[in-house]
Image (cartoon, rainbow, N blue to C red; front, top):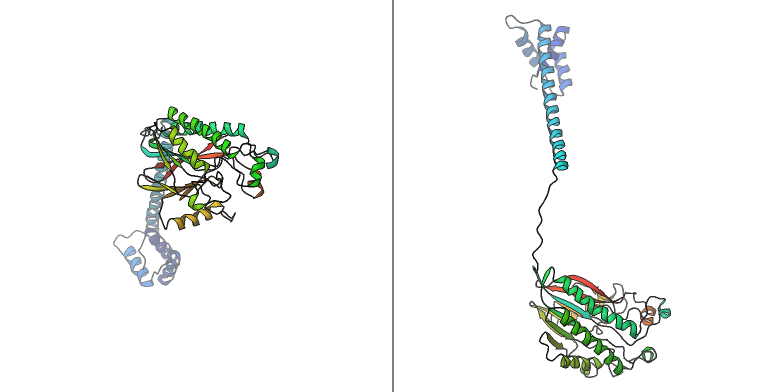
Length: 385
């Protein structure tokens, strides 16, 4: 049976005044409150209410409990209204406070040099003496010795700017200059004989002079000590095909790298790593980085671009000597594959690359920081135009 509330008592007394039977009153109460009221419960409650000495009249009882019910309802409504008003006042107060006295959070500038890293500049695939006529590539590019000279200067100047920018937020323990090959096109194909502006020997002399000038510029304009990693490309060879067992000995670039080392023999801020094999390895903060030109990665223009070919190659070569990161060029595509960094080119789009369906890419080289936590951070293209 449900509890006798004031509302239930008012209904009971009202029905008693009408002459309604206890059974009928029980049904009315059960239906109204959706619970069970028995005729015995109604009879007992009626007797207690009406059989006391000096019992008020039924109407007086009805008025009494009606007043109580109304009062309780109003009290409940008033409490809810007061709570809603208090919440609204608090909300309005917060809005006014936010408007009048805005929240100010004090920020301090980060500590300079908090990140520890090496600056890495990747240079490859300049193809300096190869001519590209704009009409042959739908005006996407143009390239000759004058343009090559300008882009090389921009390459070293923008590298200096990126080193300076990086030192604002990182402590640089040194720099890596990765010379990864194909600085000249050579004459390994009959077509190249027709479109090159210098002979291979003349071209290697031409590019060497500019690399010397660029390295001297970096010595003067930056304060880093550099490790210069030297890898031979597949173009500057003097043989028709690549001779894997004698690739360096047949490369004009290998000769140039040793010339560069002799030229800077007295320079203590240059450390030279001239590869005797296809790969060279350099450990930074205990993480091994593998450098190579990239021509051993066979790219078949499959879905996924260079990524699938690079992953497959790296997975196989890691079985012999595991490396944390591969850095290479050759494919003229600047990409970050997490486990590898591939470089762009200085020459840009050529008739060959366009006819073969390679994506057009603005001439650029690669700059990034390698942190003490083994992460490639602060990546930047070195734009050349």
